[in-house]
Length: 144
Image (cartoon, rainbow, N blue to C red; front, top):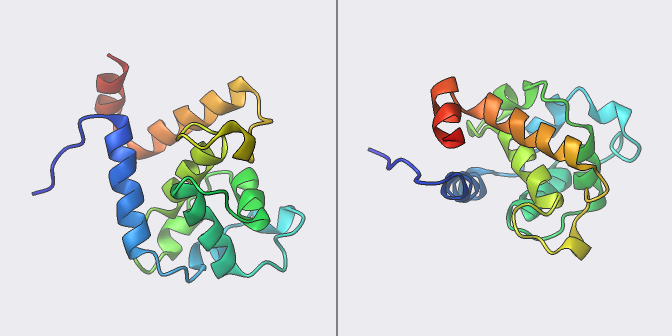
């Protein structure tokens, strides 16, 4: 039986560790994303390299330019989730990558890639992350 995380940070750390251990960098999640065609620099990007860049962000290391482009265009279609042969929640992976690229996971401000976003957008991402990954009961518990 798995232990219940005692904090959001512990939950994220557990998710990151699991994702890093299971992701094969096949790029199927990236290939399934309907938004990649709408971003400059992603139409010819190597899927595995883009995913590797997102995983870099999970380790609080700045990822490549293509990974930043993907983080910027994600609209939470969730098509990436079903595309993953390893059963990783790729949408959550991208969300956590966004959080890191915005500096909220401890990445130094001078290394963030999405720091130009305003606070309203930051909280939109956080709220969307919570709503897509937790039940209403879990969200209420975290808000106490």
